[in-house]
Length: 186
Image (cartoon, rainbow, N blue to C red; front, side, top):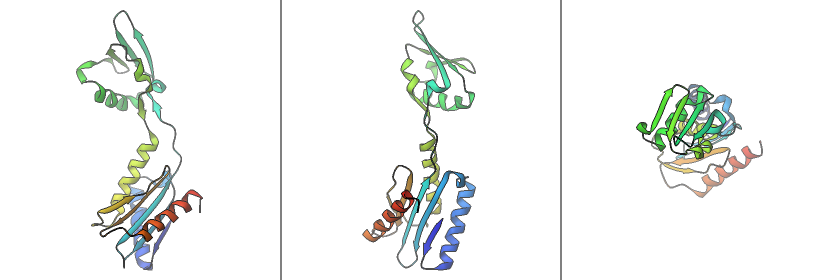
């Protein structure tokens, strides 16, 4: 972790803030590296965070077995991994009304019609979940009043430039340098 600041004490304070927020949100193990730039003279805060690799998305067919009963025109779903049941129900409730979902047992779900296309429905996306948690941390870290934010994130790097004035080109260039350094492992 690198916190750059012209004021040595300011850098130390922000390093403590960042570490505390990461600890509170249990993000430490999910982050490879972090670079921050704070300038008390110019109201700017630049933060770039490299995420660790996450597992792949989990599709419905990965955690459940589907069968279509043509005679009754019902799709039967047997949930094999109970850990995903809350996500499954949440996704189904978005797609169907609760009245359309019949759950005779904890692990069995019945839907009217041929719903075999649900097999490819994404149930869990660890990469998106981690991104969401990192953005939460960033918004806790940013100085209050810095409402002008430019998101410069790439696939595995979350990067923002924040200020309470117009964003200067030099700040964008600094963020681009941080992104390049994180991508190259510097």
